[in-house]
Structure formats: C-alpha cells, structure tokens
Length: 290
Image (cartoon, rainbow, N blue to C red; front, top):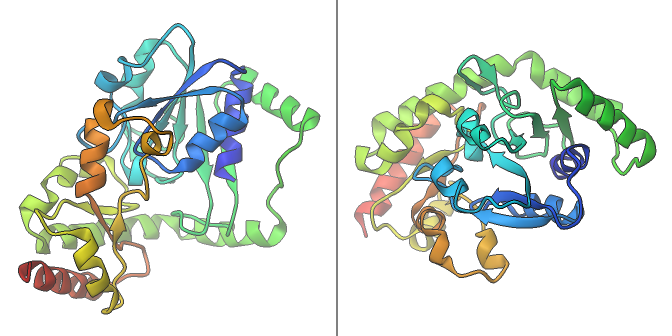
C-alpha cells in the first residue's frame, strides 16, 4: 500500500534510526506511521497558504540530522518540489492524491528522487488496496530490488486487483478531464470569496478534492443538514499530526487555519454537472440560513 511504499522509499534512501525525516502536519496519519516504521524521527513542518509544504516553512525545521523530506501533493495540489529540492536533501514525492496530474511537463511522482502512489479505495485510481514506488535513479532501483529480496514485508497486487487497476487506467484520461469540468462548474456557481484560495492553485491541481473556505459557516452545523440531502462533505483532513503528537499549535499557524476553515466538496468522475448544481444549490441554501 502507499504507507509501505513510503517506508520502502525511506529504506532505499538509507534512512535509519535517529535520522530525521520532515513531513507536513497537515496530512493523514499514514505518513507518520511510515516514518515511525522506518525507525526514523519525524519532524513536523507547517504548510504554506495553499495546503502544501513550502520552502519558507521547510527551512525552519531542517537540521544536520535531516536525511529526507516527504513532500505531499495534498488533495491533488502539487508541491513545488524543484524548490524544495534546493536544500540538497532527498525529496520523496507523495503523489498518493494526484496520480496522473501533470506539472511543468512532468507527471506526479516524477518530481522527486522517489515517487510514491496509493491505490486505496478512495484514491483517484484504485485497486481496492495497493501502492507503488517509482524512481528514475538506477542505484535506488537496485536497492529496492535488493530490499524486496532480503526483506519482503509487502503483499504484491493479485491478478484481480491488477485487472481492476488496468481497466481504470485505460480510461483514466477521461477521468481527469471530467474532474476538470466538474471543478469549473463549482468555480462558476460558488461565491468567489469561498473559492479564491483554491483558484490560485487550480493550475497545479488535478482536483482530487474541491476545497472551499466558506466564510463563517460552521462545518459542524452544515454537514448534518447536507447529509440529509445525500451530500457528504468533510474537512480537508481528519486531524492534525502535531496535535496527535501533543505538540502545541504555535509553529503550525497555516495548518491550523486550513484545518479550521477548509471544507472539501464531493468531486469524482462519475458525477455529473447536474450533481454539482444540486450540491451548490443546497450548500448556498443552508449557508444563507446561518
């Protein structure tokens, strides 16, 4: 799976006990689990104004013990990995949430020294469960093969899972195109003040999620009302890693702000324009009620 792929990426990069690995706080807990499994020390980093890791936040937490950076393309939004790579520390690109996305002519997973994907049931392309690790570095590729021979801790995809993935892959270009159409309709129908932050990074997003910041509308109030209309919304992430580790909010200002303000709306290829219109109509109705 994706977590195992991250673990294997750390191992082939030579990360060992006591080495520091930088990860964002605004991310799912599986990232932290991979670092702990590799016996490395997780160092948490705040994100920028657009939900992903930036150089300004990153350089504050780099030390002489930093051996790797896991840059997460969160919710479909690309990190600027060439910029993050300027610190001369290996960057693992976590492309679990933007498989197939393209930035500057390169597909997701090809921007760092190692790329990692997840094919979990909720991901863009799914095999039910599964993951993948890729690299263009021949030496790392050989280390990966050796790791698989010496310490096989993963379960390869079976034939049924592979068939499921291949079937989707054949039509994947149309999936990505449909996400673009659905996102455009959201931008058209929702208040600009709700979508302005997300729109600024729409050129580097493949719209795994559609993110809004709806003024002072309380997520906890509007969510159950929408559920009654068969609309499931959620926060961007379920919990902040630094809070799970008992670390104060002080150094994670942007992460906390995103966690409190961001709402993720449904967006997936089998949806129609009519679905988007229905969702927007209901959201605007309940938002107007305060």
